[in-house]
Structure formats: structure tokens, C-alpha cells
Length: 490
Image: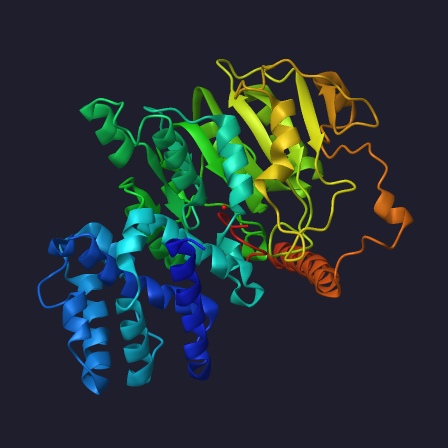
């Protein structure tokens, strides 16, 4: 066990201390973020970013009621008075869920006693990301909505190959998994940026990575995660489907997993630059993504099955995507890799064309879903599960490598643009015989079946609510609860 793994486990075990307080897993991680930020500022000699009198040592020095009273005042001070914008954003509207002084003292004492020397040697960013992953794996937390499985993120990043000097955007940033993985990919190939000039290093740290996150608690986790990985890019708190998204700079690379669901009451995104208005968030995000790419820019995007087959505006958006971009590859993902078990998802890989017409000539589809095991705690998803797909995809990030159609018995097939047009632009294509339908040996666990039923019921309720609102002339545009969010799903 590494020092980082050991610290993550110790931090996660502290959540049991909070059970009697009625604090959820997500509240616990948010609470830990506040405390870990203070401690890490001390360990990295960056406390000059914090006002005097509101630092880790000041918190440790107090006890009992005085300590918890001071902690509340500290959260308010850092969220409103500090001159450092990033610090203020992390603590914006911060409130503690802790009520008993002994619980706070237990957390502070335990954090202070950790092996911080070893943690710094292995990387504080990796430690914090490990904590986020623990939270995402806990179904009761509901925080899986902010976390895309890291093996999937790594696969997408390695195939899309972000390069130094490119702008990388995530319009649904979650806790920052895609941006951090892209940064890590570049650092591994540039000797931690030392192979680059001073100006190029500055661009990578301050301008290369940017995006938007809608949920404030996820946003503060994102900022903490990026800071610990040495990324100072502008990732704002806002709604990509509002004018906030229109202000994002055009990107060379977009890596993202947009939120699932519809706008409440069938409301539409409050943007005036979408050709095809829709209450389907994924279809709206898809329009944002391919419109936000620079000519020649490339994207890898996680999207649910309905994006591939939905009629009406969905069909028109897919046709527009294939006109403006070369949609060269679709990866049909296995089920069970997100905490919402019933959700079936895909990764779309595409490159923006130099013109807006006829860019897609053929679409290659890799089926990693049919006759695959039900992933979950019993069978965790690993990087090895993507190896065959990565080999079939090839070295060209834009799908130009030599490829072989493996026929009806293989997992990788090619479909021409003409064939897709004859299918009414339906990209939900499968051809392998599903052996699980012939046998009960590979059925999901009961909780996974229940989750699937709940997801389908929620979708039906969403559609009924949207229909009712349209009939009544309701134009409410607030977001309803999501099936799950990205970096998120990430």
C-alpha cells in the first residue's frame, strides 16, 4: 500500500465519526475539502494566500466551543474577505454541517497526524483525487454524479492526444477529471513541462485548461483538485446552456461528460446561438461542443443512447454534427460503469471540419457492451478493458489510422454515411447476438435491476412533466434533479 492510498483510506474512515451527526458522504467530502485546503496550504508553504489569523495553526490552537465558533468565522472570512479569487471561490457560501465541537476536534487532530511528508512526495493532487474516487464509489453518497470512471477518462485522453499549446475545454467540468487527465498526459510527455519554453509553461498552467461547472459544491471540489495539480485555468461557476457557455473560448480539444436529464417543464436553454432548440440537455450540450471547436479541433464526449436515436430535433442535430464534423468513431460503453446502473452510454469521437458540409464519410462503431460482464463492485472497470478498442482505434487521434471491419461476429464495424442516412440518421446500431438474453447466468444484481427500473420511471415522469408543462404553457427553465452529472457520470 502506498502512502497516498493509506492516507485516503484513513481520511475515508473518518466519515464514520460523522454518522451520529447525520452528515452525508458528500457533505463529509466537502467538509474535508475546507480542512484539507487549510492543512495543504501550510504543507506547501502557501499560507501567504490566506489572511493572517485564519490559517491551519490558528484552528489547531483552539479547543471546544471556541474552536468550532472560530471555524465558522474562518469559513465566512475566506469566502468573502480574502483577496485571492481562487481561495474565495473554494469557500464561497461555505457552511459547516458540524455541530459538536468534539467532532471537529477529531477531524482536525486526525488530519494533523497524517504522514504529510510521504503524501507530498507522492503528490497531494493524487491523494485528493483518490478521496474523490472513494466518494464516487460509495452509492449512498450520490456523488457519483460528479465522477466519470478514471479508466474511461484515461482512454479518451490517450486517444484524443491533447498537445502543448492547445486549449482544452470541459463545458461540464464536474470535479475536473478530464482537465487533470489531459494535463497529466501533456506533463508526462514534456518532462513535467520542463521541455517547454517559459512562455509555453505559463500557457499550460494558466490558459490551456478551462470550462464551466454548474453545481457549487462540485465547483469547489474542482478548484481544489486543479490547484493541487498545479492548474490555474479559468473554470467558472455557471450554466453552459446559458449565455455563460457562449462566452467560452473556442477550443482545440473538448473532453466532457455532460449532465443527463431534461430542463424542468420542458424549458429550453437560454442561448440564442443553437440552431435546434431542445429541452434534452445532452443534445443541447452536443450542439455547444461541436460549435465550440476550432476548425480541425477534436472532441471525445460521453453521451447516452437517446442521443443516437432520438427523432425530431435529435435527428437534425445528428445530421448537423455529421455535416460540420467528421464523426469517425463511436464506442458503445458497457453497462454498470456509472452509479446510475440503468444508463447506457457511448463515447463519440469527432473532428470539426474546415467547412460545414459533408465532413462525415463513414462512422466506425466499436461494441464494448454486448456480451460484456456487468461492471460494478464485483467486476471493477480497468484500463485493460479498453486495450482492444484502443488498438482498433489506432494512433491517429482523428480516426485516420488503418482500420479493419471485423464483420458481424466482430466488435468493430464501419457504416457509410449513406447507410446511416437510410436509417433516418439513427446511430444506435448493434449487430452482435446478446448471449445474456439466452441465459440467466449473467443477470445484474438485484440493486442494479432496481436502479434500472427507477431510471426508466424517472425518465417517464420527466417526459410526462414536460408534456404537461407544454400543454399548460409552462415556460419554467430551472434545472430539475439530474439522473447524474458529468466527471460526472467525468
